[in-house]
Length: 620
Image 1: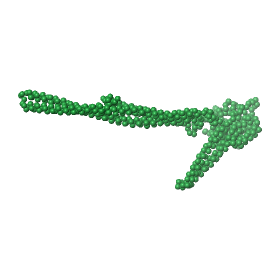
Image 2: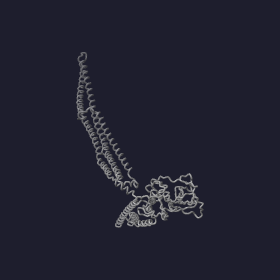
Image 3: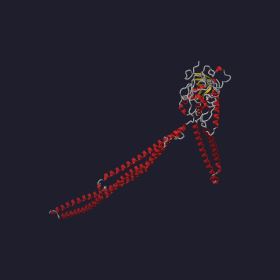
Image 4: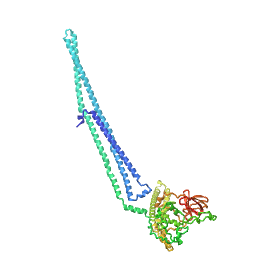
């Protein structure tokens, strides 16, 4: 099977077919190129997807990845990066092994095809020239034969005519001989050209064209073979990354199998365990006995210390736990000063303060009764104490010893702080060792540097180490206290608690946690300088969107008051401010100046309430 034999007369069709083959090859190259672009785009999208869901550094999301399910998800994201990398490998290999190679081969193929068909056209032109020469020789031979035949006939005619002279006959004879000689010469020339043409034609159809067509056939077969090899390479490039992609998928499955629901549950316990004991049973409240309410303006612990009847935290119960009451109400109760207001200046007249603490027009409500409004379901005062200790992030920074946290969370934070400080100490010590070694090198080889230039840096590092060690010792002491390694404070609290039980046997069951929390620390509720801060506990986030209290009236400062205690606000005589909460019987009125809120003694201001305001009382 040879194109030179079978297709000896299909030069033009072969030219079209080979051009079509090159077009097919270029189409396949374009296909592979678009595939590589898709692979790159897919890999980029996978990487962006994995990056989008990566946890942000120093954020809450990073803490969530302690759980095994989150770790498995993070492992999946990392494997997706490797998965995307394999698609990039596919694109690179297809580009280098297929696209680039085929593009180079197409250029070579075009040049080879061009040379073959150029040779074919050259052979065609040569045979056409030979054919034209043959036709020209044939026509000349035919013409000379006809001329010779006419000259012979004219000679015979002249020779048969008796009236023609002998000279004319001789002339006609000589003319006939010349024509015959020319015919013989043309015949010989024609015969020679004919033989030459036949030879050229034989060479053209049996040698030149078959050879050219054979080369074209081989070229076309190589093209077909090359495109087949490229298709195999196309599949092999995909097959080469399958094991690695399989490993990525295996790692994802392995990460999924590593999820431990029990471990995650334990982590939840460690993250949110407070260390407090559950509240005890609520005691029965006997309403058959008239309840005596204290009129003292001091704190709740004062009423206990003076031997007053036990307060029951069950009055006006609304069936809610205190963490779920309105934030503004809770803030008002917590930030109200825990001491009686100071008396007005001596020059003040009692009649000048219509809304003072002794005014009969205003219904008084002791602070102990105000606590009943939100301590309805908590029989132990340790809830309020823990609230007060934990709510220190609103008006100030968190305590350095993390005393605002529950015991268990405090222990974890302290331990973490100690570990971080130890790491920093080790880092500084490594730096000190490195500087010391460098100084020794400088001492041995002064040309490398001045040893004295490192003294300042060495002193600075040593000071940093000492500072970090002191800091670590401080946190270790707090950690030891929490873990019970320093029982002195706990014993003192227990002794004080025992004294309190002896003095107030009827109230110790309900108020024991007021003096000693589950972590063993002691808080004196009678202190006049106790700071009540608004906390940032877990339920605080639910109140961030709470609207501020509306103004229910205005007031005018009768005297200057320096608010030095927590929750109070300073006013200047003659200043006009907004009233947002009137006196509840404890001698304090809550006011607002722009964004600043606080309490001032009721006797220091003259209050003008808006009767239409919500929550305002009507005075008769």
